[in-house]
Amino acid sequence: MPNGNVLALVWEQKTKEEALELGRDPEKLGNVLWSEKIVEIKPNGMSGGTV
Image 1 (cartoon, one colour):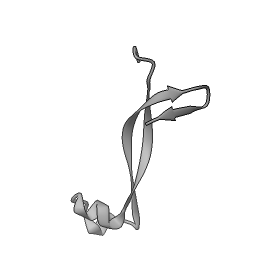
Image 2 (spheres, helix red, strand yellow):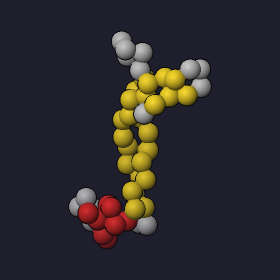
Image 3 (tube, rainbow, N blue to C red):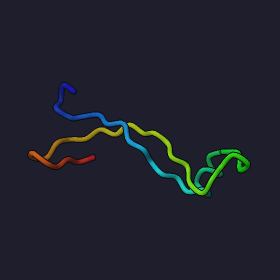
Image 4 (spheres, rainbow, N blue to C red):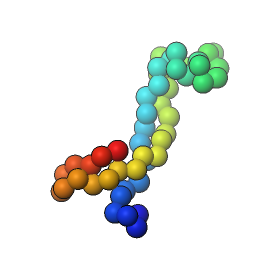
């Protein structure tokens, strides 16, 4: 990105309870739900970053 930050597509684990609160069908749901999320990372040095 122009400001030097990086966008990353990551997986986020939701519990069954969280998924149900978000409106998921309980008949089609296992113990966890994996969803995608985009995060912006500001690099800190050569091997770190702030999300």
